Length: 77
Length: 363
Image 1 (cartoon, chains in turn orange, green):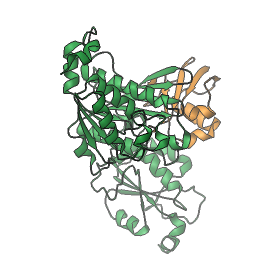
Image 2 (cartoon, helix red, strand yellow):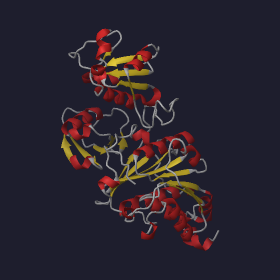
Image 3 (spheres, one colour):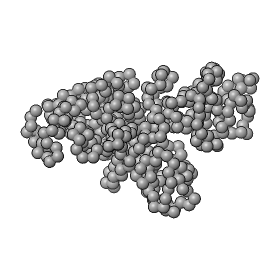
Image 4 (cartoon, one colour):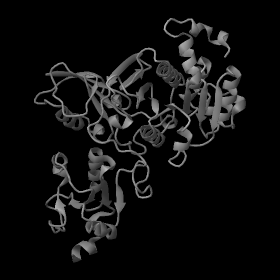
């Protein structure tokens, strides 16, 4: 299935916005593992996912056409 | 009140004298008179917010001026909060301005917050941001949050109930602060002055909406703004299922310093903890590593299986982690902190088994 990745801040430097094909991944934690393997820089960072514009607070199912936002904290002022 | 000054907003449909009166009665604290704080202060003062606090202890530097638009070249070397208050007073003498010439800390923050209803976080570091967030939760203050990174900004309102009475705060998004250096700040990363200008102005807009009850403030939402693409992305925030850990809730602030998710201990402390009833000691080394420890005392949970282990519940309150050199045990402690926050206390044996080899080989 195809999902859309939307990234912010420093994460967009190594995960540009894109549509990706994923197979065999059905949940947000599965996707998280996949992302951290595919983009190892992500594994060492604090970040949060949002699924279809809702912050992911628990294991959620991913469906074809979903959008996943990957967001780091910002501190600058 | 000089109504002519506010005439254009007084005649605005859906605003009017009632909203102006609410602004006059409002007490807003702006923390950080910097790139975000300056534009926010300008519009809050101009709109007629009645009581405006400015908390900052920094002095003005030449490299601030491209974004901290309340200051001029002649102000270099002066205190930001004092210069800002003087400039705002000239712009609009109606509000009462209060200067807090201090850097907020666990010692002074409750006292500083006492007189305000709404707190605006325009600081530039995670230590302050978590402290402000946690204090707003503890003292039930509304928090408007803005932050920038590169060409992007984040904006949110925390600790204000939505229509269903649900409140969220920054720790619902990022329960634990990033490590120092993980996220670059403006000094390291650079910043275009107009971006905090926009974000600080948007924050002032949200504060005015909160005070007057107009429109839809960003309650339980986080807005992302990208200056380069002019795109906005809004996401809904829901409360985390884990208890939010808060700075300063620990009984002893010395043993639970600000933002620390775990405590590093020596072997003596580990032994005294092991005598306490509610303690579990976990060896996170892989099964092939030496020396082997008594599995009665040291529960084996290798890092390779730690994610699985996290899905089970730990009943003990003190969790001591150890490994060969005290590095993996820190990672394990942080993972447990992500789950339990300060509801349990995580300890990591500093230096690991290698450092205390004598102890482990003789027992």
